[in-house]
Length: 314
Ligand code: KG4
Ligand code: ZN
Image (tube, rainbow, N blue to C red; front, side):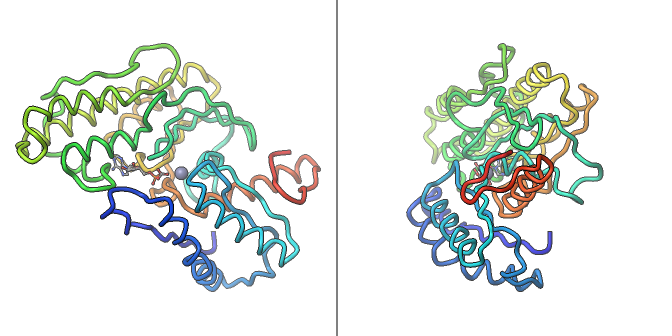
């Protein structure tokens, strides 16, 4: 990793979430400057590049179109291949970036992806070899944090604010449901939990909610999510006994209580727990570049030439 830049569009905070149209336009105006700055820091020139890559989805389509059109433009101008990277694949492979964690992360491993848009357990068996073992049947984990934080009158994004407030509360004060806990498989569900929280708040109204009660709700909600996640991951590890490590990615992996619960699961199973540094757990370009390198190497190893256009694993 020679240079990296993340331009966070936190300007959306005042609007209570990402506004897709504003985000897409920001990509358009910011991208050339970001690429130029990163190139300068890397000490390389465009002509030194062997390939160009961009994320093509899943995600907010406007930003994806801007980013991939820009990278395709560079690839055509420099006569190099363009590599289309899947968003989930990029998260799945980040942990293997050399120098990130103390040891090499070997396939197969279990990936728990928990962000604002995704919540799923993925068996990662090799580059291009992914199997979704289970996922949310309603909200993503980060979405649940954001919605509960909103009910509690905290800002956006809600996860970090809720985690901070939970430190002041008693996690056994409020009894909340633990959706799908103990059930077969490793699907998740968070919408009922959010409704249960709103029932606790309704009698007061958000403005009149005593801070101590808000803290108890935050702590109880967070502990619920920890219990549910640990249970689902235990099931996923049972479905995948060959897993060598448990890898977590996505913004929710920033949560210390959730990390601790997941680490305990990995310890129980006798496998390594791997959480890439936070800046690489949330959306970033390094993971997209690394997934492209893994794709190129997999093609080389299989002696399959890179096709001109969309690339998938050989
Ligand atoms: O991966 P990410 O940065 O963006 C995408 O959703 O793709 O994840 C953002 C999500 C938000 O829902 C945010 O509330 C949540 O991650 N999050 C947290 C914490 N920090 C961020 N959730 C719980 N505890 C945190 N400390
Ligand atoms: Zn992501």
